[in-house]
Length: 150
Image (cartoon, rainbow, N blue to C red):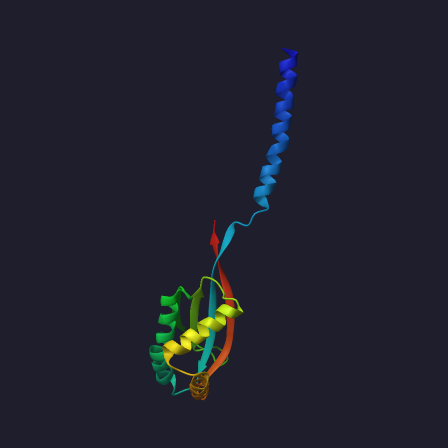
């Protein structure tokens, strides 16, 4: 009987020593997993050019975003407006959700494919961007990453 009592005590001791290991292993894990990247471009538009810029967004920008989504390069995009923008704040926030960031070779491949789809050369893209720069200003940008609960 004493032999079984010692064996039971040894088993209980072994279990009690093992329990803190599994608890500490759980405490050392993140309770979240990484999700999509979220790119936010903060745009300031000069007075009198709001309609002009939104028409660009509804045209070429939307066409390019829809194409990127169709290709699986992005998972979604949104336009947010700052309804009470102060002088030093952006008027428009362009938000793009990306499952993963491409490496350099993939980014170059996508750029070529995009230019072919849009039927524009790099020079044409640069000229169009310069035209918008007359009234549209990048006030800042952020690259965030969504965290999902496990």
